[in-house]
Image (tube, rainbow over all chains, first blue to last red; front, side, top):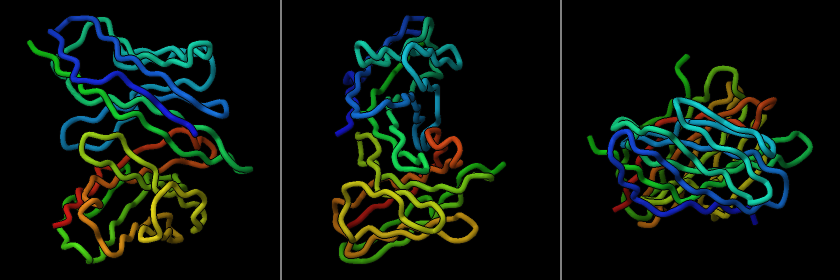
Length: 116
Length: 113
């Protein structure tokens, strides 16, 4: 079945450090890939997405490139801020059925802690 | 736009009881999915509703059931609650024409004691 594997956290960084959170996937079809962020006590917010190989998703200084050859979608940010502290989830979605509806398969999440 | 709204925000139930959680999708969205997020884990797909029918279902027992109303809002029902049902329950909505992008609500925190 479909699955997503993320690096375990917590990832602890100082402000302005470079961030990488690794994500690899296994899928039977041609998935779209997503990064969601969850702040303490809140639901999930879509951070960025990529729908086909070699696409780069970007938002708020975060970016990730869909690498089909390595089945990866690593999240990067050049300079993190304290406000980036949250849990980050990598997810995939494979369209299913004639009407194209789909569901999300999530990784276990990676907690990011940024100190001043 | 109110986004995806869920109620209640927190709930405490006793083992063996039944619970109903509610979700109103984002304006313009007609597909609703429910997820269970155990503490320290990623969300797990429970089921998805479109046109008032269950379209897909994850690996959850029949104790978990749902409903979608003509206004696209949805309910999640869990019968015979177990301690292991304690989790954050998330509702996500999406428009059918962009079905791979889901917007999530804040969730309902269910504690079973």
